[in-house]
Each structure stands twice: as C-alpha cells, then as structure tokens.
Image (tube, rainbow, N blue to C red; front, side, top):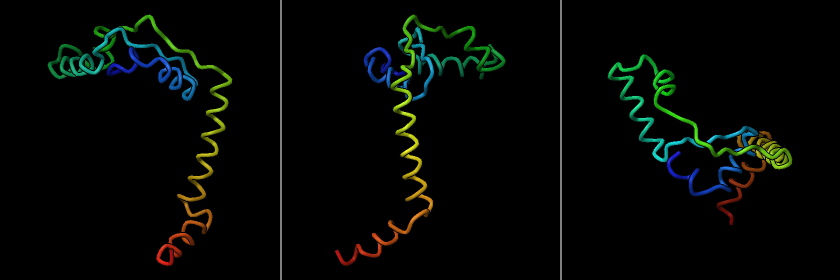
Length: 107
C-alpha cells in the first residue's frame, strides 16, 4: 500500500520471500485512502464491519508476487540467527553486554 507496490517490485518480492506468502497488490493506487473510506463507511453505518466494507469496496489487482522457496529458506535461516542474537543479548543469555557496559568508562 501507499505507492510502494507500484514503484518497487524488488521490495515486494522480498516481502513475499520473507513472509513465505503470495502477495497480491491492491487494485487501488490509493489503498490507504481507500482504507480510510472503508472505515468511514463503517462508522457511518453503511456497512456493519470493516470486513463487509472491504468485500464491497476493495479489489485485488492483477499483479502478485509469489515466494521463491530458496530465498524464503535463506530468510528463515537469517531470522533464526537474529532470534539467537536477540536471546543472547536481549534476554541476558550471556554476560557479554554487561561486561562491555562495565568496560565503557575505561575506553
């Protein structure tokens, strides 16, 4: 949404690969504005829910991006390493960050 799908095919392919899901670009080039209009239609009681409003007001476009299995596998491995780093540094799985913080005044 917001113009990226129309202007950046590489980014959309990366999104598809990272999520390991097919992404279909909205038909509207003004999808954020259309979303606001849908919420307005729900608030004005033209539709009972955002799901109902979207069924009536939104359309999928003809362009879609399918995940590439080999790229998705690489992103999965990268994410696993990111999680390991997060657990190591973010959850106190190791003293390295505390040690570095203690050394900071000496540097």
